[in-house]
Image (cartoon, rainbow, N blue to C red; front, side, top):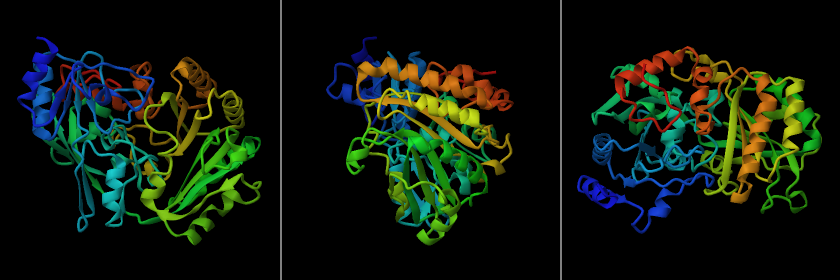
Length: 460
């Protein structure tokens, strides 16, 4: 069938709208967060509700069209689209409902974490959930999820109570500890392999105001700071998260103009509590360090720190990233990091170390699909720039950086930081002994591998 005929056929079953390349708005609808990835789906189905999702899944399966699922649209690898296939776009499904008595938060699959933070903050609640308000709830959660509150409350999936899912055969099920428990286990870190998640129910944690913000030093001080940081973090209170970044000072306000474009070592802090307690908790980290270039710590609402990076990295930039889990940070690894960041090809290119110790480690390795419970950090190396002409240079730098530091790391990486050209080959080291169980769950819930536009786990 012609694309327009296919779209018209699908459109009769949907309350949402259906777009093809001939329709106004198609280019805007297909655009991805990562501007390096330019894909042209055959059909985009912008679903209004769960019934639309069921109809779209059945349509894609029956017409044997490759399917991609798009939630908040933040995925760096571009898994939310597919060349010549069907994009099931959940972006219009953005309802959030908070139950203050039960302290639960239900978020539809098109929500961003900004949507959730806004709704939950009114009731003094939050969920560990990345560092951008623009990140999609669905993608981050299904990949495991970590954020400022992870040392205190664990991964995002550790706060997950249940998930509503449309399966490959079009059935709608709710997965939790009692209903479809094996599917619920697999969804907690196994990605979008098992169905289309249409809503998530989270257990909320008390969080209102936090004390934190960025503290920046010149790169010349990075060696000293990284050595201090590696020894201090394991003893730090779990109310406190500090991630370390090697990057450049953005050439935008409000950053000090005399520092624009200069390399820096950033300590991004977040203490779940008031300023006085936060300063005491951080004192051992900063004691004896040189005067920072800037120290913008302050007390603020939790949603404010969640959205602090949004203006620096808007949608549409060129991205290429590589990642690892990191257990230790020996001197030789620090030297490799410093050598590689000095060769960064652009002002926006970064390396971040996100802490995933504390409460994350209190779950058994086989409690969820996420297997690397003994890591200390989740590392990402990202080559970023607005200029498409720099894409090859960004990719080459990220590869070289990763190859320089990977020998110091235990293997495996956060699935949400994997690019399309590496995801499948890294599954075994990422999931370890959990991979076989995931493949069995895939066989049970998606035996024909309909949902394969992801770090794909093949059916056993």
